[in-house]
Length: 312
Image (cartoon, rainbow, N blue to C red; front, side, top):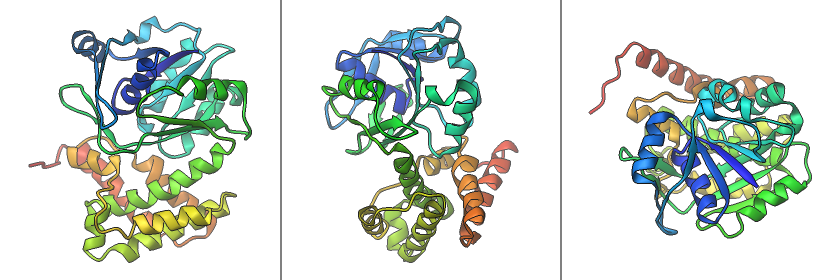
């Protein structure tokens, strides 16, 4: 199975690197600056599951050709348009595109561009970052990668990808028959943490210690109601798990959106907070906190565009 990974940052570098470490045929599609770092230093992974230093295969955008079984998209949601243009020359009849972007709107976009038969659903549960020196650093023990056919069920291609990851260190990769449900589940818990941590500028434990558990619980319940309205009710076990997480004063859980705000980077506000606000309107759910969070993100974007961010 030939796998093309778009990007070698925190997600692409980790999931692509672990597959390459296990002997998979993996190539990274990267920009010239990242290609130079990888050529000089290798792909370096720091993780509690074992460190790795690999010599990865890389190509640049003008070198993309067909012949890939899977193209793994690990870009930010706001870079999807550029990602589509970059991978288009590499997509042929055999190619499955596996996006692990946050949110849900990207699925419909990719299906319109390439055809529904070429698009898998995928999600990852990991906290990782790319350090200033170019190292992919895993921040906790989250290491899950789930994927499947958007229409449900299984297929030889998702089973083959699961088999390719079977011996990979530090990754629990699984083909699932209900990936659409799993995507909504991720949006419910990610949306809860995004609304809470972005508005409060603190991680979950800090919010809970400040007395914010009732707020987080209310956001969780509203997000679950949104998902149920769209045909994806949350299982009891899921709700119990995340009620506990959003009541844990020791939790260090924070979203990448919060980390991006703190670093002055672009954020996925419209793709997560804006999407949830619109979905809440469709579902008839109280939209006040979702509207506030989306407005907060848009205001941050305006301040960033004006060059008025101040960082210590």
